[in-house]
Image (cartoon, helix red, strand yellow):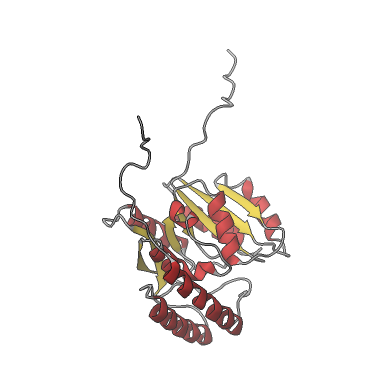
Length: 258
């Protein structure tokens, strides 16, 4: 008896969670990080979307080699480096799941924290909860980074009122629909909690693990982050003042004259 032919019209099941990983020149980190993500999410229906932001090392080749090992992994690539915010946006747009987790590609975020953040969002009593943000309670960075980040977080929280103590943590879980409704600009990933609040939702922070970088080098310096941060902060303050959240009444699918 002949084996049945595959159904060309079969619809591929949509995973519940997409893990978006922006990477730039992280050839030594992508494989161990991808394996950690798979181990942490065992038992969940998930996909991993790596976004190679125009890497000039062997990152693209390393991701290609992982495809045969991990069917849940997909990789997209920017022709040139466009920045972390653009890479995250590309990953979210490429994702199919309704829930999205972002995690830095340097290995400092712990994938084992993702299930708890997802559960907090998925089972939230607050229907307006749009994001669960990681809070690095014990930073594994240099003292310069820790001090500069602490100052930046206090200034930002005071001016934006986003009630998020650590917006720089790359580990966040949110709804894909909410993210796609946000305004886009370079460095927007640093202001996601404030932008979610501007949209009319709520955000909570949950303590997560933070690890020292084991491989590769940081792509950010203290001074360059400070300079662009001031400009971006003023821009987000302007967006907050100009934003309006409409309250829709009635059935949006109703048709008059029926």
